[in-house]
Amino acid sequence: MKILIVGGGMGGTILGNNLARRLAPELRSGKVQIGMLSASDKHMYQPGLLYLCLGRMTPDELYRDQASLLEPSIDFKVDPVETFELDQNRVRTKSGATVGYDILVIATGSRAVPEMIPGLAENAETFYTEQSAVKMFKRLQTFQGGRVVIAVGVPHKCPMAPLEIIFMLHDYFKDRGIRDKVQLHYTYPVGRVHTLENVAKWAAPEMDRLGITYETLFNMKEIDGANRVVKSEEGSEAKYDLLITIPAHKGMEVIEKNKLGAGGFIPTDKTKLTMEGRKNVYIIGDTTNIPISKAGSTVHYQAETLGENIAAIVKLGSPVREHDGKVFCFIEVGKDRATYAQFNYTTPPDPKPPTKAVHWFKMAYNKLYWTTARGLL
Amino acid sequence: MAERIIIDARGSFCPGPLMELIARLKFGAVGEEFEVLSTDKGSASDIPEWVRKVGHELLGTREEAGVWHITLRKTK
Image (cartoon, chains in turn blue, yellow):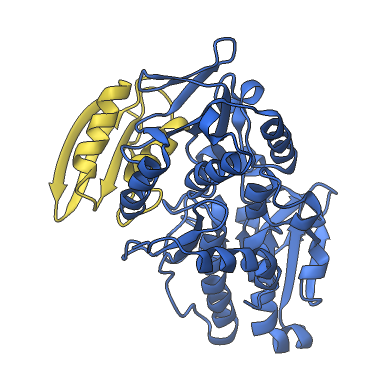
């Protein structure tokens, strides 16, 4: 049986390693082959970008060689897929190769698309790529005071990022001794400060306590850079001296080009993780259109469920369990406190008051992540 | 007539029904109809409020067996 994983990000990597361990005897005997096709030979720890933009991590800390993270039994190639021929159970790659499969997993992820909002790329800072995070870090260093506005595009990766960046900026400016010269203004697309009701109930009073103002039902329409104003779909405006945005995201271009899903997000069964209308094609992570957080932990748990199910298909002939939609997100609440939100398809989160212990656990996890990618944690 | 696009946000805590609708509208065409399915009763008020505020056309809101169905047309 040929298992092909397209994408070498967090989901593809955890899944590949999980399968390689579960199917070690079958791999040795040649009954099973696992292939992985990726666009890069590097693996980025994307949550580190939040720290990079504030000067608390450096770019080299975000990367490992992808091959070093994978079980040697995985046939890894840097050769991105260009065409999906799902009716023929094969893909075609950039190098011109044709690769067949019995089971296909698409885990190509998502990308920030600042150009979806006119004026955003030219006028706003962001931290969703290494380059933009370094640029934001340098901009922050020279900022001496004024009105900082956070604006949030939809859909976006890492739903906690808007809250984390506003709280971390509070401490950043406080440490520089200029918090009294900085007005922090937070905007958010739905009618509360976070989409998770229990998180919003906790975060709004925290913002009040720290002197952070906020406006809800605010969806960016365009940025007027000349007048330093963000205009919203809802008709309101926010003036800024420094605009920091969480840009809207799309799925990868190859998904759109192959017409696999609107916006590059593939219609996916939320418990089976199969592509709609396909029994041997699975979708995980940001690539799905499941209404669930686009976050590392989302795909971490999906990959574990799928690893168990694909191994069961090989060994028993059918999957063994449905995915429950588990997500666990840390929430940094400044430079030295954090909490977390854990939930699934049936149980909402109930975040606890932030503590230093959770923050230090998050800091440790920033290093431990590489064991997660290897399928060990 | 084009097929109505169903957004099944039942049991979605994050990003939640309204955020999911805002996202899907970005990738839809003007004139397309959307139907949001939500098990969060708050959707019955916050989605229509947002739809009216932004200027899309609200077509209806109904509840069936604990699931709210909010239908609308993208107008811009």
